[in-house]
Amino acid sequence: MRRGRRWRVVVFVIAAIYFLVPLLAAGEFSLRKPGGGYGFANYLAIATDPVLLDSLLVSLQIAVITAVLVLVLVIPTAVWVRLRLPAVAGLLESATILPIVVPPVVMAAGIAFVQANLDAPVFRSLFSSSISALTPFYVVLALPFAYRAIDNGLAAIPLRTLVEAARNLGAGWASALLRVVLPAIRSAVLGSAFLTLALVLGEIVIARILLYTDTFPIAVVDVGRSVAGVSVALTLASLLLTWVLLLAVSFAGGRRARSNA
Image (cartoon, rainbow, N blue to C red; front, side, top):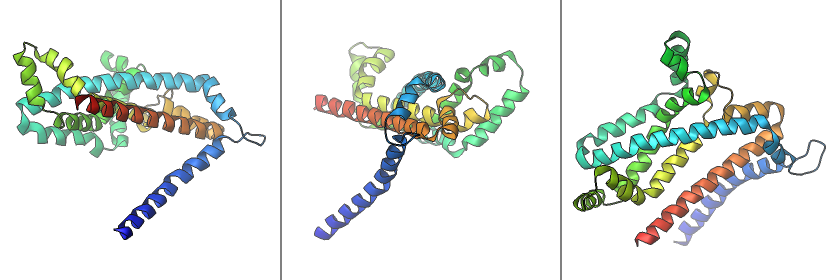
């Protein structure tokens, strides 16, 4: 037992060094001033750069719309399959893996062909802005992660019992879904929404190939080519934001579990 504990400590220390040393080095580099010394000039430059702020606003709009569409598609579908069509669950799970199997470059190449060769009004309006053009494809990319988060949340609750109890008390399907099922899987819903947010804030392949350069990931890359310190500071700030969101999900899920107990 002592030997096993020692090995766990060794593995933990190696993992901590592997992850923390690059973060500490990046933090030290982001605090360097161009003329020497240390300060928060790179972080202050993020808040005063209009290009970064505008691109962050665009990506946040895309992320929010994508998260809402994903949840509207996934939650009713996952609930209906678990209640009415359990035999289709394996087929649906296999179908949601397809966006992971197909590389984003291949998807972007197909989208670029549609963008260049189809001149119908619906396609012109679709590709008129980055929000309307990128959101549908980000919905597809987020489906595998959102579906598994929601499906795991549904598996952890007595779904059939809750829905039947709500129906016996006179609730309709929509009311049972909104007032009974959603509160029970709140942490899974938040997790899928934040996973979608992280995907949108990090996806660059499709936006770059389709030449939508007003999104946040492309702005980060462009800033890194000219001002490396600001780019590293921006990356660390994005990573910190992701950690805060994940901690918020964990806190919400833990508080929900304590309230149910």
